[in-house]
Length: 475
Ligand code: HEC
Image (cartoon, rainbow, N blue to C red; front, side, top):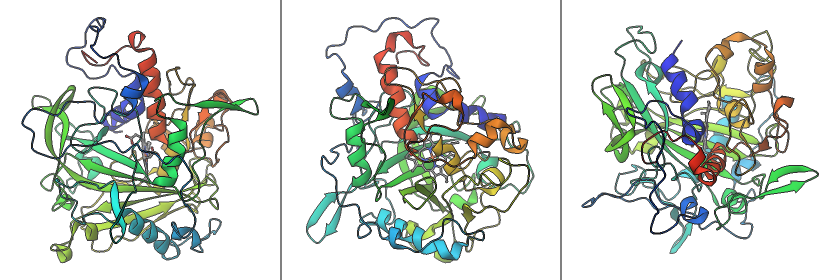
């Protein structure tokens, strides 16, 4: 069992940002009260900060700027803008095939890649505004607020990346030597990502977190729901996942992007990262996650990911041509193990063929081959983890397993079979459903957006700052 991956998975993202005390070299016995700042931070200033860190003097590289001019009226979000919605795919077939879905995923890939430099050079990064017609530039991509609040793990200043799972090499690449994942001596690699919503998704985000920076919850039929949700059809979400591993560590990463990012310092003595110290280094694109709203889906969503791998035959081609879809998923397959006792064939998750893939490519998919990428939790899956996106009321700190469902499951869960927790975790439900375990009936649904969950968690952290244990000195 890979305890290191699990531990980091458990403490990554939401949990770490809100609560973690894990891993600091010298946590203070108690957090001293902060000195009175010259400008008092408000929800608005904290929510829409560009980055959590400072641009160092003399820096000559790119500097990230948060795209948060969310549309105030509903943009055009129909099949003309989102052509995959016109694709005649089946969400109920008992024998789903990649060949029926490849065009659907390609439409999304084309939409996402439009207007970008196909080599994603460091100095250009990901463009938030693209040329949509000759001479006409529009903002296509918007970021989530509140992800630059936590000083040591929040957005970094170069490309706006945030810190996710720390994986060991055995989780990233298949190893011919059969090393046990997490074995002593296996190096650890950080993942640094940036997610973006298109204008249709951003229209919802601007209502959920308006210019005041304060998340908005309203009462509908006696329940608390987030304003602006659900995301409208036509919403596209993408996330670029980068790893500190390179082509020497995992040969399939050869030739990938070389973005600089203000990541954490690697401590040579035990090859782990100090989560309280930052340092710029080079990171490499490993996967681009995709998610779209499609009302035909039992979860309202379709998830996909394209992965990078070096292909000798395409060594002179742009990086975009070395990205391949890993598969597609629109449900958690509640009729297959571990939601039920039998390993019935998956009917809501398809893994795509990987042309010219090197033998040593990725180590794993998700739970029982449900879709998950090389730097995702192998005991979950895209749809399964994301369906569990819930929050507590603003100003209340999220606590997984207590007031919101636990989504970062321990490895044992996938192997365990139909426990009540597995039945709930691997089931299908769509906004505005409650999480399918009554213990969480007050948890507020976020329509699969785990970045919104981060935003809510960070806002709560901000509101009650002096009562929350901080993970690093000076946070
Ligand atoms: C075990 C949980 C887990 C799994 C599995 C997972 N993700 Fe995520 N994902 C997260 C978390 C947590 C975030 C928010 C934090 C962040 O972006 O830094 C996130 C963010 C995202 C975002 C940005 C928008 C949003 O919803 O927050 C997209 C898009 C996304 N993931 C797609 C995928 C795809 C596609 C897969 C499968 C290939 C996948 N994810 C697998 C946990 C997971």
